[in-house]
Picture (cartoon, rainbow, N blue to C red):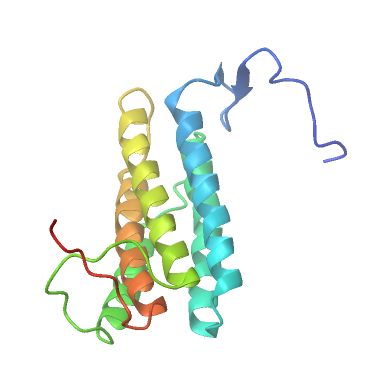
Length: 173
């Protein structure tokens, strides 16, 4: 890229990976924005966490989120596979083995890194909902939705890990 701006989107349309141009208000662009926001939030988590294993996992996930964005943008190589979903499940199981079972709801709070993970989880859930909406009008591989679904689970467990067991429990009012 020689320039960051192209002016091709100044009229309210933008191009997809397959060459099609669609309106920027299309749900696909909302999903791509949510995935981009999620990826930025994972970058924030990496900056706040000082755990090398967590950093390596989040780095791999950030790369996979670029694959998610490409697939949503109608790049037709399925870069998200069942193996990617299985990898998240393995990480979830490993982290969850280190945690006490939950006996009540927890609030999305805690230290900075744990709170950043809770925020990432909520962004991920929005991206997944948007992907399901976009799939009504565009082809999105089911592995993308599975990946986002599992990623929100991973981020919930990771928030608990990052909070080091110092969780804020919900108290019914």
